[in-house]
Amino acid sequence: MPREAFLADRRALNSAKYLLIVAAEAALDICNHLAARRGGRSPEDYADCIAILAEIGAIDDVLRQRLVRMAPSLRARRLERRRSLHPAEERRRW
Image: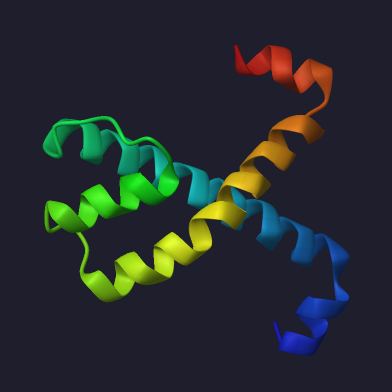
């Protein structure tokens, strides 16, 4: 799909945004698991989780710096997504 067509298609754009958030959540869950398992401690927040991954050699310093800058916005989007769930969807998650 050409870029212009993609940007004009609200459904495609919203789907891509949603899938990006879901992928980021999965990556953060994996990050927390690896940090706790191999780093020997539970991370205090997303930035700490990323720092632990760098400490154990799972990511290099360049990637660590980029991800730490992104961590606050990922957390905000994750919280926003949770607040936007319909009550029926929230019940299905449990």
